[in-house]
Amino acid sequence: MSSDPDITAYPAHERIPHPRPAVLVLPGGGYRFHAEHEGEGYARWLSGIGLDAYVLRYPLPGEHPFPAPLVAGRAALDQLRERGHEKVGVIGSSAGGHLAGLLATGTVLPGEDVTPPRPDFAVLAYAPADLRLLPDAPVSFILGGRMELREALSPALHVDAATCPTFLWATAEDPPGFPNALAMASALFSAGVPVELHIYPHGRHGLGLADGVRYGDHGDLHVPHTARWAEACAAWIAQLGG
Image (cartoon, helix red, strand yellow):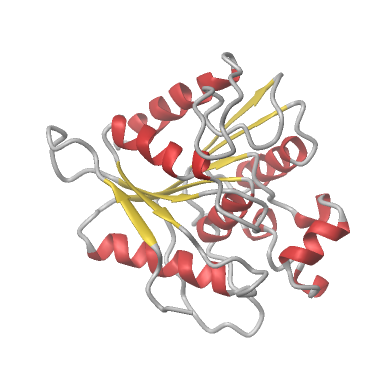
């Protein structure tokens, strides 16, 4: 596996002055593929609101077990800062949101001797936060059968005061997304970390922007009320100073 992260840049329009924040986009896909509506789709939205977006196609654990996806995420954060971005955030949905949560909390696996980089803000969409809330089968796939890592790779269990401000959203019709969003919000609240949580009434897992714009085989569902999460998120990022 190459040591260089697989990143595609979607810069904001040149009329937006520098310096401007960068956002590392981590698409979902159940750690089996990279869903383009949560990759390119998010990146085009972010660049449209004045942020430089970078989609990371992180290694998939079926071929490159953990910590490979996490190591790639850390390398991507470092690379964005080396490019001169003073503020770097992460956004991820589903599996990508799980990875974004691991980056946000500075998670390290047992035996790792590193001080990982952390983002300055995080947006987690229907993201697994506590793997104990998921059925055994998908967790075993993610962990390559190493179920002893279930807690080590649960972001909600590693939140501390150094975790960045976080925006969370899910829907009440999403069995994995809803309880995990609540678990992450509770952990952030307990640690004194600024958090904004939105639970929308309708929409299945994997909605992305919920605007009906298809990328490949995904993104075709339009749920207008739920789609307002992007507007709320843009306002939240703006009040951070980004």
